[in-house]
Image 1: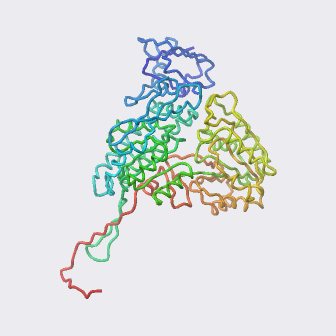
Image 2: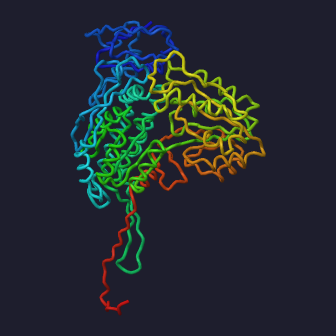
Image 3: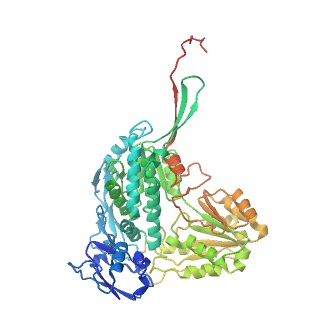
Length: 608
């Protein structure tokens, strides 16, 4: 048994504690800490039989003073398992959703933090009876003046470009290096992981993974890699003294409208790309999780970024649209629903790069092997983050051999292990329980369809009624019925939650599977689960999804920083994460032709 005494400035990261070499030595851990630093049940792994949280703070006691732990163990656990709040942080994630006075998020414009006349109250997504997580400025149209002025003040040539303020490429390389180092620090990583969990409940592993991808991205662009994004090229001209130069040129004032489901990773990767290329962005985060990016702005300022380089606007959709139009925003990058994407494309006359809906398919080929692994990956793809990923597995086309091998039963077994306790399933923030169950009922009306598992509300929850709370669900629909005009749209409707459609096919029906893929409207991610090279080639040659995994370990989810992530088949599509994505989304091509030498023997030709 070990007793741990914690000062007011520290929090316990049990995830790291369990990674220590002495984790299995203790059956009971007593932690003396202030109430505000208590550990949520979702952080308690099963390896710890009992965890007693005391509200008593021992003011003069240093951490891990207990003599029952060796000096080596004390220093190792202290280094790896305790973390102070970052010096730049303006909130304590442990108090979110428990403090009767909720944290107030702020706007940022031209270097000044401010509030608005009215605020939105963000409910605790896990407990309808608990205090709100935070309040967010509900900025109104008549309060946009400073934001409009800020956007209009950005020249079309950007804040920097290959010929202007070039030192800023190096400055942002250094800012990216520092920010990456900060997010790689366990204390800061834990701060953001906890903050993410409080706004978008997901397992600690998923939240920490989001922080790691963001850190790796920032590390990738440390040093000279920012200016390498703006690498120019040249071609010799038609005559002596003529030479053409191709440059990557910024747009100037740009906007980013970010989604809720990855409140750190998606906005950071797009925001930094915009900055790297010389733009000044205004960021509109999703209201439910705005505090995550507010805290990241504080981190960037601490890493040396000028407070005037980014504006942070908290508002609802129509007000953001007003700013985009009245602020002469040159480009908007939008990640979210297809409905809003189409609206922005219309009102801006196409000046939008979008990453919208993702009804993502997985095709399991005829060669069956590693069934347990494939079943696990199917479960992760469909239900991790409660299915709230644009890359989540929406439909499975399984060769009949997989059903015979028991794949569906294994998928059901894996889904049954998910629970609210560890947040492997949680609230659905854009659907209600009724809307999800109504969609389930609609599909079950199709002839031959059946409920494989789920289809009911979660038990024992206190999630607010404005959110959804359902068990991981899978509905089987026969392929031939699915392809019928009266059923196809319903079967291909994305439910941004723990829901998927499953069907089977035989050797003669692969053409029908490819027909379904062709008729889908959005083409973000896909997976071809097969090591049969000929089968792979057939499917890959006749499909279009922008991020497609192939092979036995193929998945639909995963937007890491080491490869392109984005849709294909759409001229408006936006990528994320890689140099190619950054250059494509956040810069345009400018050609400058130098022509300097007039030949000494030149004579004026006849007019043409």
